[in-house]
Figure 1 (tube, rainbow, N blue to C red):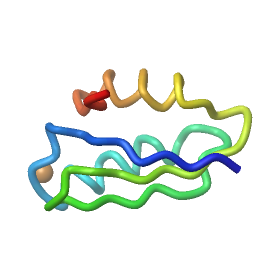
Figure 2: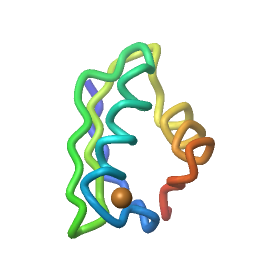
Figure 3: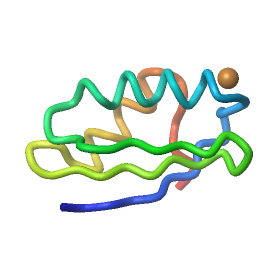
Figure 4: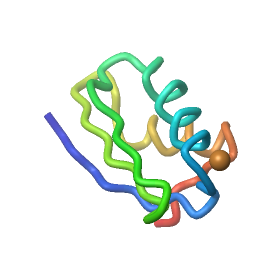
Length: 68
Ligand SMILES: [Cu+2]
């Protein structure tokens, strides 16, 4: 199990967090996505075949790129 906190500057409200949760939730291997709209951060937990690279590319596709 891997866990990573990502800063997402484009998050403006709870709906943004829900969109991210829905889209990342479709990736095989992702077990948990928690978001904090105030902090503009999400925390993702995953196992293979999901990967940080896959998570980041999906975030870019849905216009919520990670800051780092
Ligand atoms: Cu929003």
